[in-house]
Image 1 (spheres, rainbow over the protein chains, first blue to last red):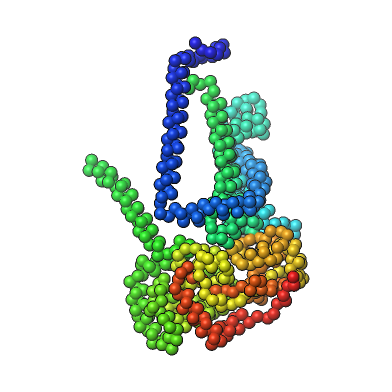
Image 2: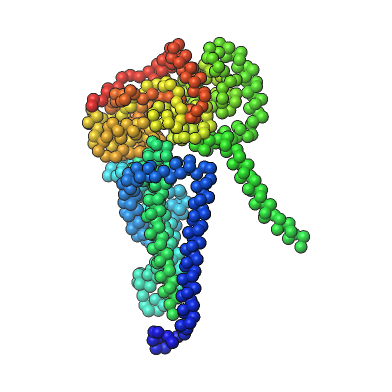
Length: 289
Length: 334
């Protein structure tokens, strides 16, 4: 019979020990077959690729172990600049874009100029390529030589990324806010909450939970777009890889830089997957699978 | 129901047609090099595929005119247009980057003084290229120019040009993957700064230790900063010299390192309130600009003969005096 006592009143799923044993054996068998298949497939692919006529040249040019070892320390040091940029940019993007999204959801007619401004901002900065914004701000604004305006290229590169990404993330937030059922607002109204209180206690908590996966997606995208700041001069990982590659004509440096980005992105994507799985589990809680 | 078989056949037919188009496009690619720019690729592919018939007709017409014109220039043994291996037979294809910077490429057009026109024959490298072409027996019309980004010119691989002139310094690393002609100009590096820059008064390399210096990526100027000047801050590296000049004007960097003729042009014509802080003494035997060829291109020997002839006759020095008439710039002390 069942090994755990069910809570009183909850539906009981009958767990047959025979079926459970069979299921465990099947799961073990499936895992074994899957692993064997994966290993076999990898071996076949590796053998086929290494036998192709062009492989030695490709390996020498793109996957050269000596070059990889030589360039990796310099690339990691340059990557610190990328890390700095996105760690500074991301919180500012989240706050700024939330403000924009909330502005666009304001209902009162007196806020029409603000809504129009927010809409124009989102349209413009989603329409313009990020690298163009970086050029405009990074070279254009310092050229004005205004008093008190910083000229540091890292500053303007980060500012351009913030402006560009806030437009995208604002739309994500707006979608999240729209995904909260209108009955929530009506229920809040019936409880006597003002608009601000409704947003703060009812709508936003649900909205943000709904859009955590796309937000993580945009964060991962931001990590990669920090490479665009290299056009303004600072040496970050892409520029360092370019300097290495153009002096030795071996493109392993680019592959190494790609590996660094992937090494950073994969934990984030797995974390995003876990968050999403946990949310769906919670939303399905209580339902019989 | 008669429509159904047609529709069933349509999708595979479309797939086959698009695959065929892609294969046809790829088949034209080997004519261009993988390491040249899209413009060079399209120009080479267009000339190879679309105008193959037209160019052979033009080259037969041109080469019948050429022997008459170049009989005086047949002093170079075995180096006339008929027996040279050329990328586009009948024409000499020379590569350079865009924008083509003065004083190496100059244009008459007053509206475009910041970039030169290679085909005008004006400017130091343009003049040298046409002089070499003339010595090889090509007329001015037989010289074709193609755009090749600086960084892909000295990268290994097939080339869509016969040779490239773009202020490319001969370095041992580059010589491993491409071929160079003999040098046609000895170049010194120089520092350009605004008049109110912190390093405007620098007189020695040590004075530059705290400077924020900029240079174009992949250039010997950047190597110079890293290996010779060795400032405390990392250099600022730009995609091209124009970005470096913008950063200099914005005050984002204290100075840029470029070759001396470029430095003269920048300070004389491009950036107001700028000066050449100084030039560096030649290191390790000095740098020379050379024409760049694909590895193993037999054209190198003929171009070297042409350059030797130009040097002997004094024509090269004449061209240098005409376009690179330099005033002196102070040398940095160690």
